[in-house]
Image (cartoon, rainbow, N blue to C red; front, side, top):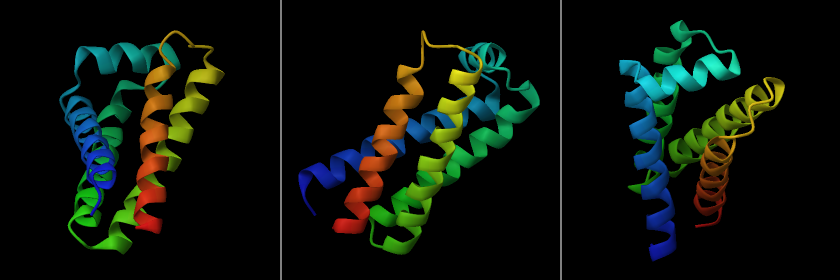
Amino acid sequence: MTIVYVLVLALTIFANAFEGVAGLVGAAFMKQNAEQVGVPFSWLPILGLLKGAGAVGLLFGLVGVRALGIAAAIGLVLFFVGALIAHVRARVFHNIAFPAAFEAFAIASLVLLITH
């Protein structure tokens, strides 16, 4: 394993695990963002579970269950495409860098898992 491979996957895992927990507990910043982009608060736990599942799947990919890691990375890529669409539809651009960064890390993780 290369340092870049481990670092990118570890950062993606950590960031999505953090966001997943924040969604599950209904953190204030998650509620504020959901309100701005028009996502019902009732969706936050489900979205948190999806991010958490993605993080767990990437962890399995990091430790050698490559197919599960690839599936998780694809799921996260699709998840953050949806997040970006929600931001654009709601014309919320002041914080679009966050889902864009998560999308970039998900794509990078997917590429690394496929090519490694």
